[in-house]
Length: 82
Image (cartoon, rainbow, N blue to C red; front, side):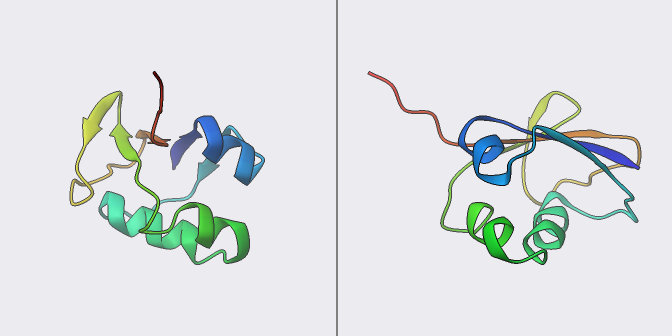
């Protein structure tokens, strides 16, 4: 089981800030693909064209990094400012 946190525009688009998910293991990219397979807004919001960061257990991570069971995973959208 993992906990997934969604921030910023992702939280708004997906209409959720947090969820728990049964997890069989894999990489951050595997997790994103699993969520995209839900289709609709999930596929669009988490598409490869949208640039955002992956955080595993409060550490900025790479998409090929392993997401261990029990992890807290965050998806961070791009931030603009000025």
